Amino acid sequence: MVEATRGQQLSQFFSMPFWGWGPEPVGLPATMHLRICDLLDEWHRLDESGREARPELAEVMRVNGLDAVARDASFRKAMDYIRTNYPGYLENRSCSQPRTAAQEQLAGSIMRQALSAVIDADDPCP
Image (cartoon, rainbow, N blue to C red; front, side, top):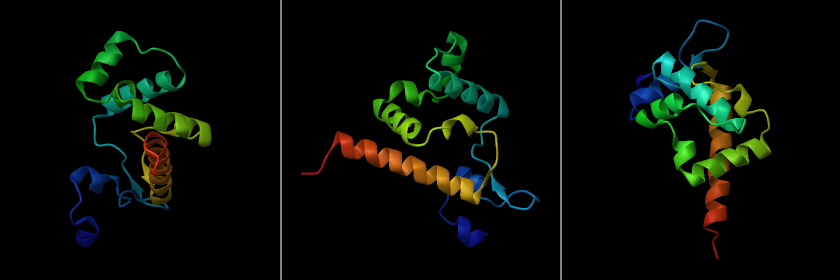
């Protein structure tokens, strides 16, 4: 375990699939308080359905730096790419639900594809 985590941040360590006693170990996708995870999940559900968050929720997200989708046009484009190319993927995510290694790899792969597509579209190579 020491070698596997060398050079990793603590939050990355928690997300590694080392945890649990079930058939397959899991990682924890977030190290935030569960209350904040639940609020973030609510924020994402509202955003993905095209509805505005109540002002109190928007303020909590802003104060905690979790409103990237509202502030960053490139991140919004990446999320739109995921919605278009992986329908249903965003509906099943939660920052408070553990992920298996396969789920974590899939999530990372989808996000890398989305970010690459946005970067390529914004700055095409000659």
